[in-house]
Image 1 (cartoon, rainbow, N blue to C red):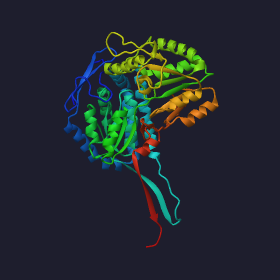
Image 2 (cartoon, rainbow, N blue to C red; image 1 turned 135 degrees about the vertical axis):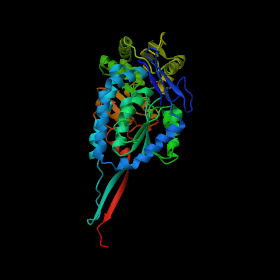
Image 3 (cartoon, rainbow, N blue to C red; image 1 turned 90 degrees about the vertical axis):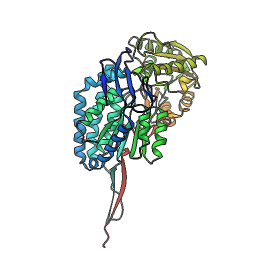
Image 4 (cartoon, helix red, strand yellow; image 1 turned 90 degrees about the horizontal axis):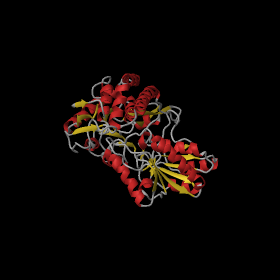
Length: 475
């Protein structure tokens, strides 16, 4: 794999080949900095033969790795975490240059990945099965076994933290891993792989560099027993269809269209701050970003004015989208919605100059059928739909095929409990758009995917469970 890097950053789209690449093998990813437009570097995609070879090596290493004591697997995870910690500035810089994520947030993502690796290094050795109550002269219990070779396919919007969590859980449970990072941040993905592989036995972890075609090669390989995917819904559907055709286990966290309900009686400034954070942080490119806002009519005017002021403040330090193709998609959804009657209160214009910047944007007069409400925009756009009461807002928020997360801002306990009961999503957040206890697990629903993607429950996903019965009868 040839890697050439200059000290700048990125370009490719969600699950499509990037400019300067072909969909086939032996292509080149050319990454440009979305902040400046400068070249970050070029990196060769793996050929079909190279990808097959990496799966072959992982398959060959699987038996010995599973037989390795879990305490030793955990020790090696700790060494990987140490390696990432020593390279945190380098990795954060790569993340920043390839995706436009701020240096502070990039560093936070690397540190989150390190923390998660250490967490799984501790949880792996104490992962337990269950004893079962049967005959008093028999023993019945469960036993977990590694699945085998796991393909981990990760996105660009939080590449280090997501990859570290999935890879760490897979490895500590005794699986070997083939990791395909997003084609939008291949230099970071390659460097993560180098740090991991430096402390692991040969074949236990391999990194595949390539476009969506490389991912399809992995999903067609029947030697891979499990796929863990975080990314777009379209890619997730394709992975699920291909992988389950040969009996593989699939977990996936895919698109979301997370609703924010703003009830009457809230503090307007606080609610607007929460909405801005949820809509504009990382330029709206967070899996659980706020995508739809339903505001009680009693507070709608003041809330909108306060949110516009918040957006203008965010625009004082603009952050780019990951690339110009993604910016074009965000602006297209906004333009279509304007043509349907939506009104832009601030933002909404593609700026001149290099890079892929897009302003924090507040949109009013929105209806659920408009593209900025019905689609996952994944950009810094806050669409506001005014509702007559909380019940109407809750009904509209729940009428969505996605099921990742939702947030309720309300001082009314009855309304909060109704929302918790009604919203069919993996995570319901009350009076805070982000946050949660360490180790918390959530299972996305509907078009957002299936299976636990983090927390202690993720360890169970990376294992099969057998029930063992030992009879105490005489022979």
